Image 1 (tube, rainbow over the protein chains, first blue to last red):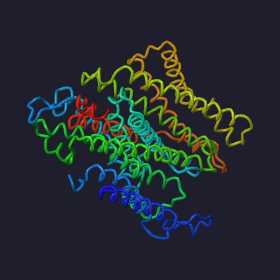
Image 2: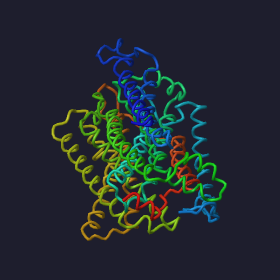
Image 3: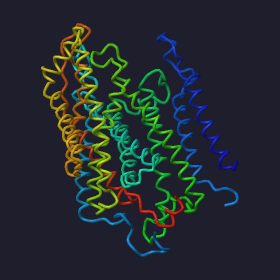
Image 4: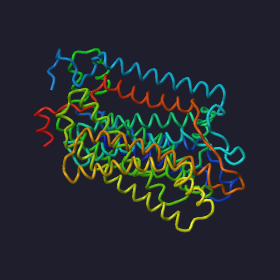
Length: 71
Length: 434
């Protein structure tokens, strides 16, 4: 496995983790109570979700552009 | 392929600015200025300068032309990236001439969709900041802004960048003012078998990731309407799939028109052949058929045993004050379907007819978007309010003109800085790909 592969997979993994955690644990909880379920548990969690999406797709750019050591 | 330091002009009209292009841009700039005037008036006078009013108490509609345009533009983006992804996934060589224009169309349409949302907000800055700060993932709005505007737009940009790097590398070998820009774009691209294999792998996985993302994104836009129990006509399971299918219809119609204009302007009849048009025509015909089936099913279900509110809405749509728009839009979808069916049966795919079909279905799609957004707010009230009205003001219409002009200008500018049709592969590159 080259460094390119490792960094690409790491970027995808971190991106997906950010999406999952921000969506299910940091954003407003999934429940019916209007007051408790309105505010996010962590402010800016939607922005973190978006960052996760961007990081995951940026892995494609890294995979394409990065140079392996032997190159 | 260009030889090092070639003095030939850049291919596909890149970098050459003629009188026709300047005239086109002049018209587009006038349209953009008209739209900006509308935006400034709206910012100065507030939303009261639009035709939108509160539901119920003010007997109006809070969503109007702007939201219809959001749905329309996001719909157009759907077909662009779908077609581009299918071309790469299944290696449809005869469609490669339209792949990049489809990608560009997607990016431009998403930018316009985002702009239409921003204009719809009375306090745009506050709206944008609060979405990133407080948005609830349970809300379809979260899916719309997080997946469509952020994720989908970014993914499409990445896709466009990755698929266009080889051409950027070729263009660095031309002596031109844009050489530095092409070098930046190519980012050290060297055409080797390893790199080609990497390109293939990247575009394949990107296409695989984007296709489900866009179905989720468009469905979530449909859910914005389809999950609202309190609005007759909106609440229903067909909203999400109907959004996806009509998105495909309007987007492919757009792509047909765009491909015909570009191949004419660039004299690229060989690169964008009739086979590509026939494929797009067939695809649009199938989607149109599915969408019209959805409409019939929805009307029959609504009319079978409707509640009072649903009945009022149906009457307004079918025989009342929205009937002209409903039947007009339906005709704008049915007539092209008949034409496409005829072309499919006789196997005579004429580009000119396909372009007409593409324009007409887009008129129909715009009408359908307005019908989805507006009548459910003005008619069939569940609370004891009277029937509402909505009519767009010049401010909203000027913004609409501005957005379409901006889209046309962005595509025209792209055409002058980068080939909107993929450059042909050199024989040695084709050997590598085999």
